[in-house]
Image 1 (tube, rainbow, N blue to C red):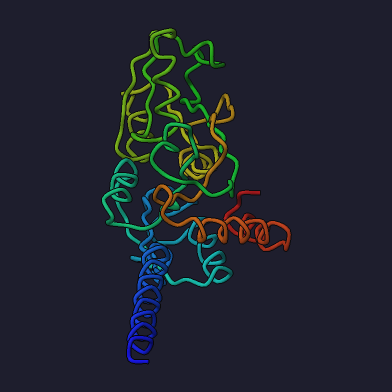
Image 2 (tube, rainbow, N blue to C red; image 1 turned 30 degrees about the vertical axis):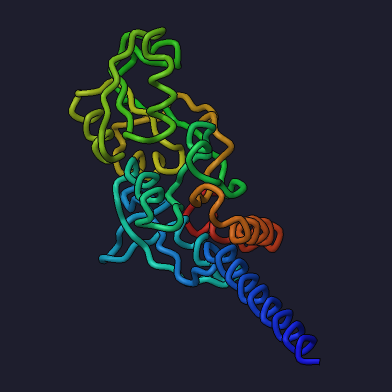
Length: 258
């Protein structure tokens, strides 16, 4: 009888240990999804997507993020940094998510997971109105082209710079690229269409003369690779809901993107 009791006691201990291990495994496996307040990285120099107004970061992306967070159920804090530093900051664990007018490209997909697109990316070619030598894409051959570092526009122009004999003039902000054009340090600037429209409105001496798809799937939200699969699925569903409910159209209209 004693031996039977001892045997049953040992079996009971085994089940206790197994249950504890199982709980620890479940805890570990869900650890990456346990964040309730996400640190959101963005470059707040990119109107109308994100920019600073009275010390507050506002814009189309901020409103999209706000709407998504309500549907998914998370809080967030906004963190301004250089555009080309966003993915390195994500990989280093300094931020948890990026929403910053970022195009989902194959190159970036090697490092991050992207949501479904929430906005189509279009590149606009800009010049001075009085520059009559540039009329289309073919006529930029041999010219100085300004781009914002880290953008798909920079990637696109670097792919054709040898073929078109271009001199690429990089800037660390879209404002810097526009200033290079205005001060004749560049002949052409490539920028996202929505962002460019704001600068064209403020600078009547500039004009867009050609546009094309930016070569990406569209503007998307980025999360670290294979770290927030459940959250990513929830974000995708939220984006779909925003578009079908009409809320998305209202945000587009608010920021004059439609």
